[in-house]
Image (tube, rainbow, N blue to C red; front, top):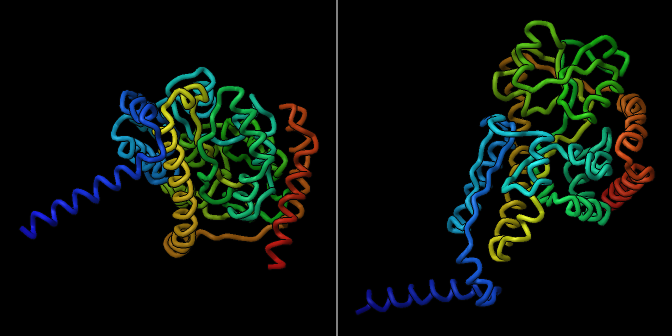
Length: 350
């Protein structure tokens, strides 16, 4: 009898929790959610050792599970499907598609996106997150929505990008005559030029063989990229801590597809997007010191400080170029600098 009562009580608790979970939705919204199914393709370029891959895989599984399969997300990494700008075009065209791409790629539609992730801007994730939560960025995301690009989350960051070669780099002049692998994103190409090197655009899958054959002298990238697939640290062993870019990606999909989803599943999609982005940021930050120590002791990789003021000055023309290239707001860079400096002052005073 006691066991029977325990089972009844347990079932009552389950039903109560289910009722509480459904309390935020009307009967009509619940019925709409129950009748809805969608299959979404999720593509990015990363490999299983990288945090963007791990976070993307986690997101796909989490959404599929929490929506009970009503929103099924099928993840493809390793550049199997369209990536970079082609991935963004899928959203613009209204495809059932999710992507995770570098924010400057959205600048073809809203030029201010490139300013938000321009060079020599942020010192840490806390500053970046503060800006991403600002009204400035909300306005940019609203304008992206008008282009049918819905940004699900901006937290998919994995450290900071520095210059990685076999040379001692301390100031921009030290990069003169050196060739660095670049992504195909115009912002990266222009920034590498301003850093003092010659950019050679290519997929990272081609980078290691290009270093071995002397096509390039190195690359600019994060600690996790240096420690990642193919063991780049075996080929290039000197990291100049320019930290010129935050290594970040924005998770996105088509605005019209997002709006057509029942509110119940949309809420879950939003929650999963933020959870996985914050998870990646946290895990990557915790793992970075471990990766650095391992590469130091096992492969002899070294890190050196650089003349940050010199690199900041060298990269200043990038922001004028963004305005000319994308029609970005001329005042935006200074607005961001002022916002970040105020945040730094507030933190220092606390």
